Length: 164
Length: 149
Image 1 (cartoon, each protein chain N blue to C red):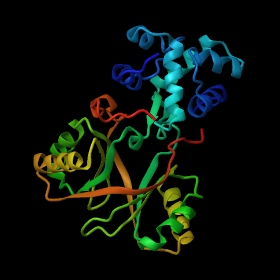
Image 2 (cartoon, chains in turn cyan, red; image 1 turned 60 degrees about the vertical axis):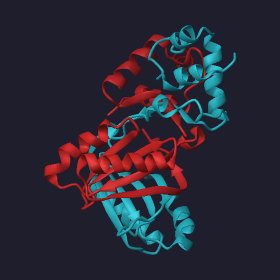
Image 3 (cartoon, each protein chain N blue to C red; image 1 turned 135 degrees about the vertical axis):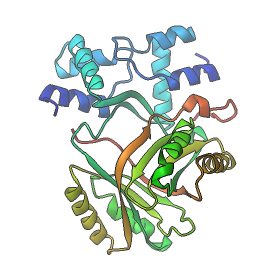
Image 4 (cartoon, chains in turn brown, cyan; image 1 turned 45 degrees about the vertical axis):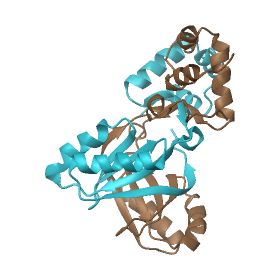
């Protein structure tokens, strides 16, 4: 199957329906076989374009009712080492080094998930000790104002996407 | 929260969703269920919002996109308007209210850095904000929003 922009955008924008043959409608639309759609998705996964494929779960519904963004103030020279220590915490789902901003001296960012606020603060306290108690800021999530998949089709101009 | 069969099913669907033309059938075979049962349970888990969606999670960098975290201090009386301005932008994927002086935190993706900054400038103006913190990633250490069920 020759992959065109139309193919790519149709395939990547489709969620997997909860039906026996979820790729059938996409294949029909593209005038190809289901195997080709699945094969292309697998190719994108192997190329790392798709980071993971499957069910995205709602942690809130699974009992992890509290989460916090923790911003750590750490010198550039020590960020890698601190991040490696923070990665050992299974409650940390995201860990990024980010550029500082004016009046905002924090450079390492982690998301921490827990059952409740007390547990969350306990984990953060342990994490802080593990990296030598730097200055940090805990930003509890109060409300999800928006969360959805990025609008990939809207983001992808023909020029932008390079396969692989 | 979820029973044992649902737990097994969620683990398969989250961690090992098959690349197959009949993925639910393959999961059913593996778990010793009927495909019909897998489909029924999955639909209920989706209705209960335990499953957000089933599909691909992209690496924006591999799609030649740039993204950033952004934050703003929004006074209570401006919050509704600011949230509406931010949320309506199609390139904003997440937006959270947090308990800090900088209370609104959102992520934006775009085809270029200049476009990203242009979007942030537009949001700042339309939402009537004094300042938006622009926090692009230098390095990604971990992103794995998979959870123990």
